[in-house]
Length: 357
Image (cartoon, rainbow, N blue to C red; front, side, top):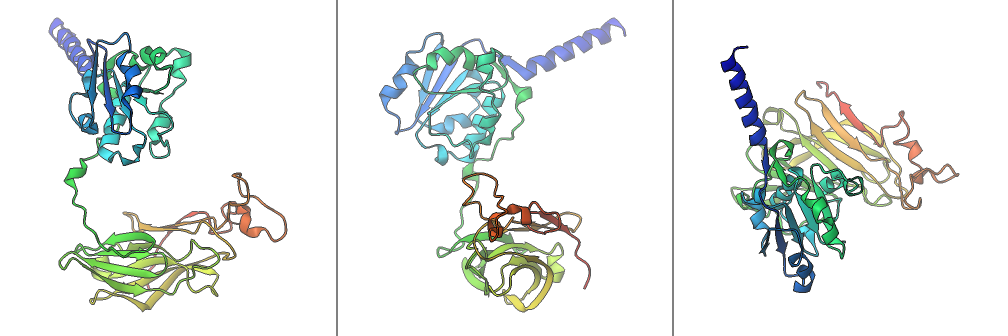
């Protein structure tokens, strides 16, 4: 390797490293608090030592700007985080992935809705190591956690893996139906009409040209005993434009103790012909009590039909533990009959090859 190529190599690597990481010259805190937070609750943050700058904002929209790189810590304080739009949530997630520290209002965060919070290792504080992403709750001990939250005080682009969700303002909200009961699933037709189903038996059709909704089919379904039964899933045939077929997974009248996966024909009149039913599969179930009917239906790119079936087991009498109950008469409460049984179709994800008629 000659001197020129070696120099070029060093300069290129140096540029790459500097473009991936951006060390902050100052330690800055941004506080975003909505009207639910009292000024007295914010005051401890305003009095923190060891920070070069503290800024405040009343709007989470600042998270959607390009200014986040300048902040070491962002405090997002509100007593209900469920109203944060997806674009704001992902912006906060990306800030965390870059190595930024986050302060949240204690007991207001549902980590089920924000699963990425579970991926942040809070034990880094006790181990003394600093890595990508830290968070803490606004408590009386917050000042002792500032150094932990700041970490290396570096924005690391190479660690940001999540894609930014598009702004909610880019979407138009269209109401398909103001009178709907227990909606389950929808399918958009090639002509942009929308089929959507209600668990208790109705399938409706929305027409964007007339901005109106009509009844496409009314199924007689079992909704007794297992009160999660009914219309459960729907998928268009991959060649819907030619075949006009719709696949539906549903619970027939209660005397039939099977769930049915069937194919139906969608008519030119915008209805589903119930007399066109071709049954693809039966799944035996118990209807003595709830729960877990499952029923998602979809096709993959290879033309296989995928069906998810619930375990058809009630977990309401196992005190939060795995529903295993081998006592006589307790089969509805024992998942060993279904998801724990490879000879049973319940509690499975099934891949189905649809043969020609």
